[in-house]
Length: 90
Image (cartoon, rainbow, N blue to C red; front, side, top):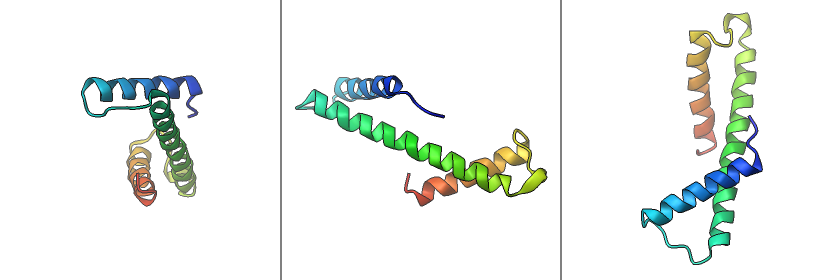
């Protein structure tokens, strides 16, 4: 799942606005702050794409026993996904 630059920008602005409105942070430089938030959001989605690919590859090695969409597949997917995210410290 690829996230567009527009979507990342939208999310960054929503995060920025919420932090400012809830008085959780003061930003001396709005453009620099938005750039940092965009980088963090992009990084997160990049990691989730890598993890998803790794988990799907791992599940594919299990053979026909695990069919995508089945309950067993979904349970193993979530388990492996959490393990991969933990390995990457997310």
